[in-house]
Length: 377
Image 1 (cartoon, rainbow, N blue to C red):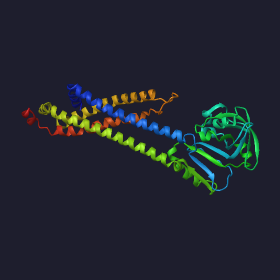
Image 2 (cartoon, one colour):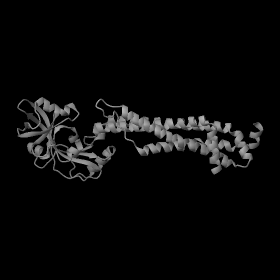
Image 3 (tube, one colour):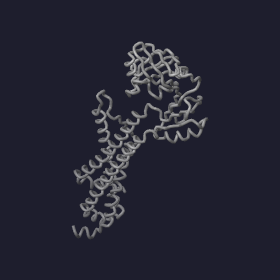
């Protein structure tokens, strides 16, 4: 094998231009695979984060009645479990009034909805009768931080609350109608006692939400509780994500096939170019097996250096894209996470593909007869 490796290096060194061209071709294929794969992965993560990243992945509600008794849900695969009490109300300020949705949240509500990150000013509600209001609603009611509001329900229950924060929830309809408070504030206003109206849950793996929802339904303390997951409510989004994944895989497969065919064809030509040298080597005593190893080592070396260059090109492309493709506010147009495992996998696939591509010329080299090759020149 050492002899075959040494001869393979010499063959590649005889025509450096051809060797560099093949390595660059492999590198381009690897870099495209890395760039496309991580770009689409980043796009999917961005879409999921924007659509369901700060919303419940699983929601438990009552089938018919408004509220139900509180019960505890263990963490497990859940990253946040928020107990909620909500209902319609009228918000009345000294300047105007508006129909609103009051939602009282337990402590993990902030973790689920990421409200702290969306605060424009002020702080999260911590005491009873503290509230935060959407920025559009604050503008409509002409209220500001530390102002008081009166909240009145359709059953004519009312409470005076203090605005401790103003939040931008990134959706106009929500910004214009939501008021968020502590759980006891909403429970008292809607006369729920210790009961709640829903449980909002976020899970670690969003694509497992439907399975976890089914498992959760089986262990609920009451049969009339309804469990809804985000996948059932966002079928169009899931269809789009699946389409992106399939297109990404197809692009990577076609790039891989083109790399394999390119290497196989070039090495096959190399067999013809080096047939005289191989014939002489066989006449000098090297075996058919050693001759085939020469081309296997050529494929391995080309794949290795092509993969190294491809990883460097791919990382450079990703850095360029994340540096120059920016939103007007300076944030990344598509946040791309550098996945070392995917990058290493792409490089490894290129090496294995180059090795596989070299099997055809390796088999052809076995069939070369030294006498006929030398006789025919």
